[in-house]
Amino acid sequence: MLRPEFTVRRIGERYDRDEVDALVERILATANRTTPPSVTVADLRSAAFRTPIVGTGYSAREVDDFLADAEQWMPDRPERSVDRSAPAGPQREAPLFTPVRFREGYNPAEVDDFVDRVMATVNGRPVDWPVTAREIRDVQFSPVRLSEGYDVQEVDLWLEKAEGWLGGA
Image (cartoon, rainbow, N blue to C red; front, side, top):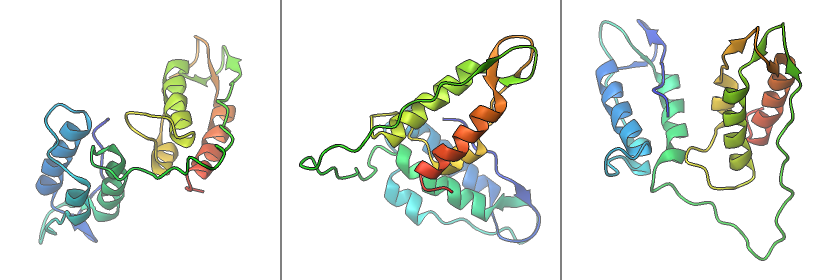
């Protein structure tokens, strides 16, 4: 999991940067399993930060969104109940994108890795870090120009559709 980048604000709803950074480090260590679990879903739901009286802070909305997304990465996250008696729903198919050359495209390795995570998430298969609608909305792939890449418009249209599958549209 990558470290989030929050907008720094001087006014408005904002959280103390040091307090947020300390919790984010613990979240990353727990999610990446580099330490024994030290953050729980309850910790994320009860997290509270000071608002700086003067100076800068992180956007409260962005931090709150991150904490909500981070629940999916915690070892103690609530499991979705699955009714085993009901027939399994249709599995969504992974897309096939048109390769492009000599015009800008997206890095195929990055796109393929992300698509694998999206497909595992929407099809209910095990995945280390389930994808969220927000992550789909915010993802950025490296552009390629001289080597083969994936058609930018096709990938962007598919991302919009995938965001809808996760309730983000």
